[in-house]
Image 1: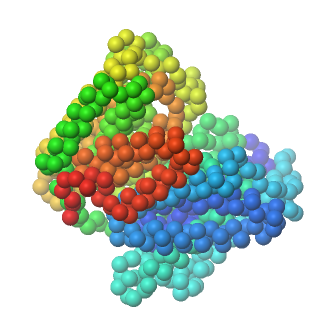
Image 2: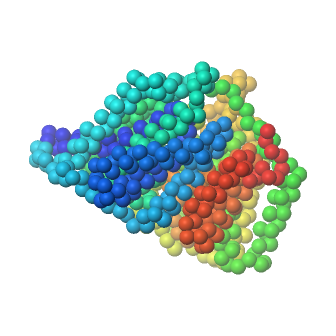
Image 3: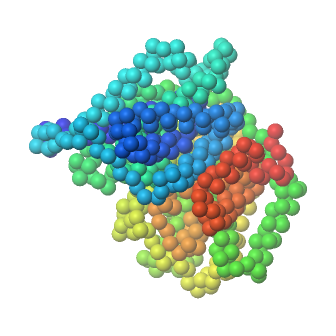
Length: 605
């Protein structure tokens, strides 16, 4: 590669890095002060794109940029005032669930306002051409982006270091409790931080429209990229976010230049995984303080009388369903049973284990693909292919768990996300084995399992048996060791518990049961696609667990049944069903913070 080609790719990487920094800097600022993992940050970026495309023909491209940023600042402040302020003292996972509900509301708002079609932005006046760089040409607008990112970084640094508001933000980032004890009005500080973070996301979206169209799916893609930059740089570190954006932007640019296009979809997640394994707190982050012993009320991890009665009645109704239900209802009930197992497997990590996973769908998808490939391409019987599904996921989870068990809290969540996205990119691009973006179709089991009612009975038996096994494991000595490791690693090690081994076993077991759910799901649907490994499926699992109640064994199955039923019913009856689900989830979070399962049985104190 010639020197001019290297320079051209460096500039391409710098332009991409500037866009990444605009997106990620706001997320880093918000997390550093409030400790909220804001899933809706990608939605702010998406709304910024749509609003800029709408405003540019009316007021001009350049005036549309600051107007969009200002408008999104008001949106961010409103979200903090109306929703997140009510959840300030709630568990962090409930805040995560609330921001996911905002994602659904924002997506359907964009659909209602601007329609389903992608919207192309105008060419920026005065910067629509290109100039010579060696033997190539470089767009003038991309050169503007190369300057904009560093300029915003310098401005943010000056604001944080030279203004009173910046001093308060840095103080809250270092020690939020002490800042409040000194008399700082935390409420308005948090609102201001959300407004600034949302403005940066809106500006990032607005400046992206000459390079990519505004589309409804950009929100989750944007938040995944933002998570990568924030975690690689160090949570809450603006200089870290700038450095990480440069690293990711340049790595992606040179992958394209070297003909490694297949790596582009997952290369940033490879970078994140490498950094987290070698330096868990990020390039410029600080090692977290020693964890304070915590204790979750575990009363709900054993079924009481009312819960046993409810579970028995539900099991009886499910067993009798084939006698009266229609074929469509059988398919829906099969999906509920399968996803209940998926949610229960995630709950093993999230509740007793205290390990948050943003990538649990990887093992669901690996199990589904293993069963599908063996049935379709190797000619295995359905029962043998189904038996291989949890084995494949168990092997993958063992490998991933050896890395993930070294981390905790949000760093663990982000490593699971990175590993899942790497698995997704492999499934998306390995056409000869997985079918690529089209996936695999025709995965219908033959013989006795070909009948819908028979398959439902088999799936119910396998999923129900697996859920009962998980419940027994939670109440076993292993479950108590897992909860002790969650509450206080130091104390658990003092009494002889091997914390890492315990968490590794739990991670591997959760992957095994997720793989079984994936295999059952593939044969139920008759097809499998890369979306089964995507972050959206992982988030769905989190929503199921949190909706049902993370401190209850009944919570995950109840949450899975509720979310699946809502999605099915609302998708058929309501035009903007995502917004309806988002509003429902938000209402449940605000009104039932212990989850739907808290309506029966014991309520954790």
